Length: 202
Image 1: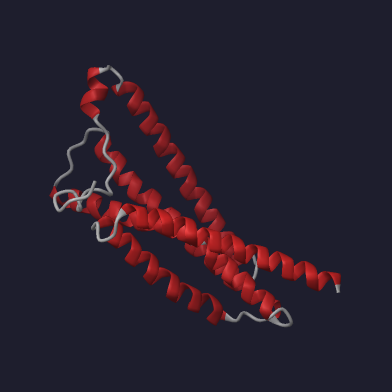
Image 2: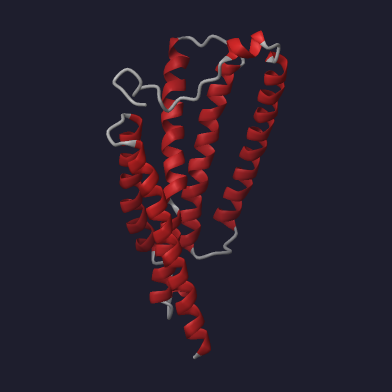
């Protein structure tokens, strides 16, 4: 449900700690939180190593690498925002400044989720253009390809995420759009595969 009173908090994850305490499950919950903290720290190390590989070791075309860096970036910032939320779930009472940080951290987390859900077609568009410019694409950077894709992608995703946060559009709209966008991405992938196989068979 969405209303004027819930639009500012509907994207924040809540845990009923009173229920956990009443059921004597607080210690179990704390162990799980500490496990999640460890997993988050490990994921940051993994991301930094992956970022290093993207920057210093070329294994893919520049445009495809740049798109993957955008995908990894949203995950990195999403996990950071989750870290702030865990702090509060440990039972610490945040001051006013930290409450503001937690609020906007979850804002970022929601946008990150939308980026992850919508990003598949961007890879497929890049691969379609790589297929179209097959004669010289792998030998040149063609930076304009990734810049054009992301200049269209990010405004649309940010607008969609903010619309979700503020209940500007019904939830079913976002569900349908998620499926529609990813189906388009799948069809683009099929086009790339079929075109590539056809060129190889010649």
